[in-house]
Image 1 (cartoon, helix red, strand yellow):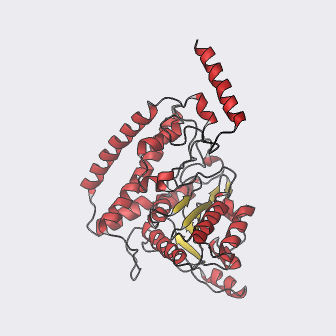
Image 2 (cartoon, helix red, strand yellow):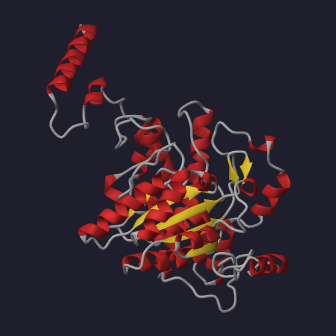
Image 3 (spheres, one colour):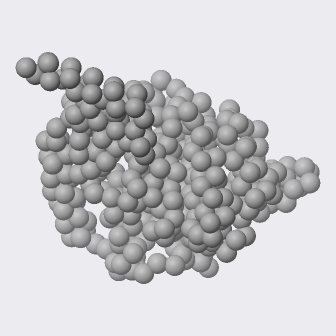
Length: 381
């Protein structure tokens, strides 16, 4: 899809020319039909089906977490409904040795990379089955086994973290890439600018992704920047900027694959803007009807990433209604079992608060631990 005539004139008048940071990279049209002449990403039929399964799983988990929160069994969650193609397509472009620095809505990448579903739910319950031992806020997932680092609620900090890790891997001679995520609202934070500048200057092997889902809580992207696009900001830092249809899984995967391989070749970072839409509220504590017009939601509903990708798979002879029904039943059973296993776990013992801070505990911490254990014994006596 090319920019409008007005957009083209404005760019030309400003001394710029339309390019990949102003146009919208697509493989599928709004109905999910393959665009004539579009280049497909590298993926086997089995991989394409795996990605669809993960997208459907992601939406099913979203629905289950909403129900658990409404019942008071978990305290908080952030919906990613409508952004499945952006998330899964991004993660699918990585290799196992690469690292992920997510924001709020990218955690399904963990599942695509093999993270156990029961431990995923255990994190939301904050119990001993959680690999983080219940210490983090909900939706702050991390897992060493899948090379994912928890994000911070202080917006945009994960981008300089990703760039720093990327540079460290480059200095060590590792052939790995770091992927960092940010929302459209996060581009207004100083850390965004510091990260892009640092990454470009040092040619860090990083792929930096903005999920432009149109809203930063209640602030629309139109109030976030005067730039024609978010991707065009990359020009100022000396790196490629690519604007992608974030609801087109094939386009996301293709452009992420290119950016990852560019970074792996030592050619430096790439900044991608994935244009998508947050169908739900910012979080379970948010009511988007107070600031968002329902017609906007309906517009994006017609561009559902799941429906578009399913149409493509059906046209390719890889999917049909019977497979869809079987998948729904399979995932329902899988999620039920995972929730049951996760929820039955005990809370972490209080003494665990004194663990995992030092490689070798200092005397003061040892004393504090003994005092805590003594108090616990007295309480149980």
